[in-house]
Amino acid sequence: ILSRILWLDGLEAHNQNTKARYIYIHGTTDNQPMGAALSHGCIRMRNQDIIKLFELVKIDEQVVIK
Picture (cartoon, one colour):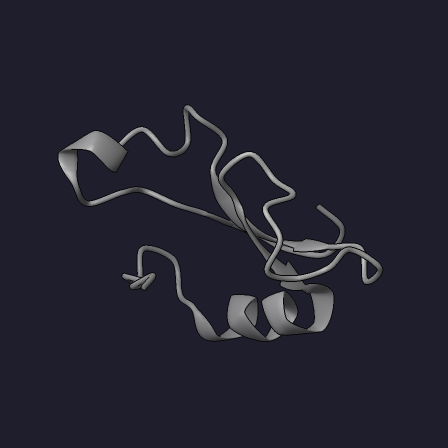
């Protein structure tokens, strides 16, 4: 995690433990390929993209991941 991190709280019963499982949205090194499963369940983004998202999302705001 190199730039920003967004902590997640799942809304579905089986995903409400995302903090306990350390599942986040976070930045990564620029030389890691996107679209490859290189984390343990996290959503990796390029650093410049997660910084923009971090600035847009307010605390406790709902984020939909599809």
